Image 1 (tube, rainbow, N blue to C red):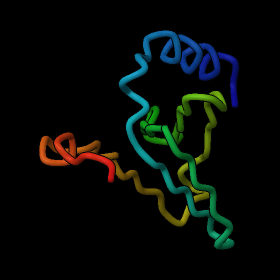
Image 2: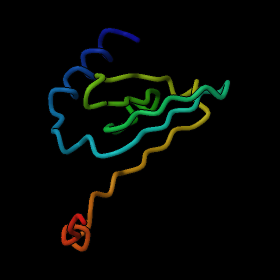
Image 3: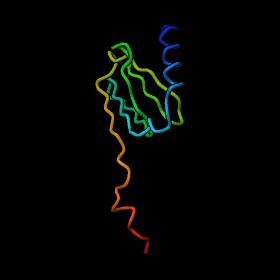
Image 4: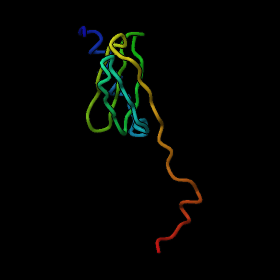
Amino acid sequence: MDQATQNRMAERAKTIDLSDFNGIVQVVHQDASMMLFHHAFAEVFDNRMLLVFTEHCGYHAFHLDDLEFYRTVEYTWGTEDEDDIEAE
């Protein structure tokens, strides 16, 4: 990865808010190896890189050409009904 791309990634990382880490990111390589990141989100960068930002493990970059696929799932936190449930 070239220095300009690294610099842009580092600048993007500075603008992230805690509320951005609201999902799970699954990355699957062409050889079927897989990575799963919790409390994370992903963005496509320059139409060639997948950037995965994690709450506790920094950020990771993957060349899109090397991936079979990726997907993100956003967390859904409790509903109002769940807030009313009391422990027995």
